[in-house]
Picture 1 (cartoon, rainbow, N blue to C red):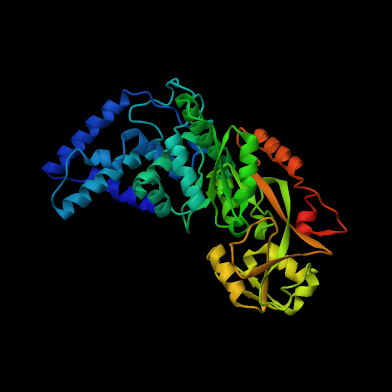
Picture 2 (spheres, helix red, strand yellow; picture 1 turned 180 degrees about the horizontal axis):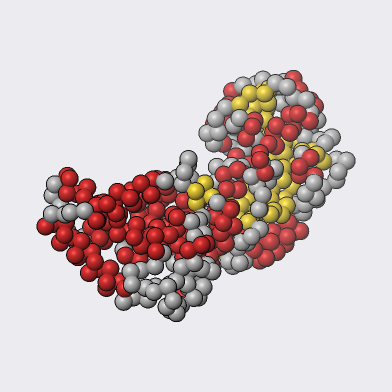
Length: 433
């Protein structure tokens, strides 16, 4: 509706009287349009395009407003307004016809056209990247900042892509959101960008690299990854630190990383949909207590023995799925959480508070003279599940090699040994067995 109002005003400005400067600008604009007439334009099936797409195509055919503005600038405010209306009027004329000036309705098409879709035309990955970045952030300002460009330039790139595809990908009114076409296009667009980067790497002869984001850092995922990388050889693993499983899941879905490694569990709202995972390791955990704790001298403990202690959680329990399930299963009601400030902070807190305990991987060495006791848990032994995750629709090209390395390292170290009546897993991990 806004477009119609602006177009009407612009058309009136073109038809009315103008001063010498405006007539000169109009003459230059007409010259520009006549030159564009000589170019080959794709015919448009106007019945399949909405008004936004028609106007986008019109703009692309006579150049951006910034290009037309280059014909000359008018110093006065009223004259600048008149100049703007004049240009909108020209654009509106093209918008109404759906074809460049002078093109006859019966003229044979020069190419396959914009409808259906991008027939015989290669996609520009710059335009594709503009769309995927905006789709991932759902904010033009943030996306423009990521890409190091202006919001205006970003919007124009997406508009050109929509015109090429003959489909609206993003809804702008009331906040940015994906259309149905955008939802369908996004996964394939992300794969196209990934494939493009792989092609560049191959052409340059770069060593193949698999990016892998880890989480659960207090439990030292790098210990397990080191064994996998040693078995794998090539391609080289390039680890990165993820904040937590929800964050890594989103990075995988966006194509920002190839693999994730940590403890996988269902996420609220099914946010992990579209991801696959493979169990790699089941690691026993011990009870970690201060040397002054009442149970510090025990050779082994049952999980239920910890009910009189306060379970220390190095983050809100809403983010610690394993500890939450453990506390619920064994009825440990006294719980306290704090910030995750690293292993040293965890060690200091447990050492200085003889009333609390926490869980810690049995194979992870503690700092010397830490003043702590790591006591095995039995009947049952809790197991922490490490898994490899990836995007189903676009798995990394060397996934099979990584999975084989995981299986081989696991066989030699018996990572997946488990006896159901001896060991305990949260129900979500049992379903993965």
